[in-house]
Length: 188
Image (cartoon, rainbow, N blue to C red; front, side, top):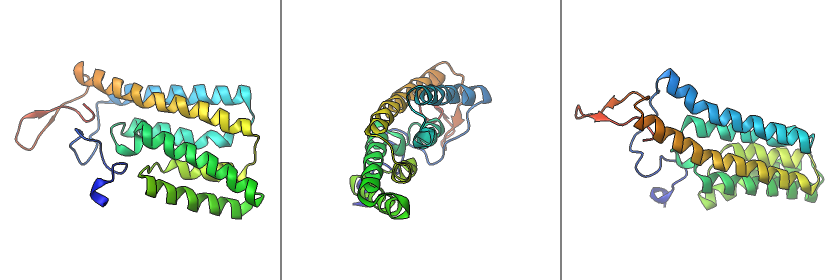
């Protein structure tokens, strides 16, 4: 069963064990989109709600996508499933227990169990469950979180496009493989 798990290993075609550093220019190019998306999410939250902490875990998701957009943990299915499940689980735990440590503990245990069972391991989702369990909010916060989550999901595709562009414009350095041939940069 462990061999079938997808969310904790690089996706098919990303045959490597470590993410190699790109050139400084390529690293900054790759970091621009997550930063911009998180700033847009923050602006939307500020405009529509004052509940900023509910969205902090999405910043962690965006950074993980920058760090390794090819990793199974950062795929759209894993990201959306785990984060949405965490928001609903945290909200439900708060509604059922009245908040506090009981809600946080129940939400955390439930979302970790669900992520393992559904093979949707995305660590920032645990923070999402805790945020919703500790901080009560109107149902509109779940809808707003869903909108913000959809922006982060779009980021996955954008990051893959940036990696493809970097690889094809030869901005990223090429690394030698074990056989001495040039290998494409990570994520290509």
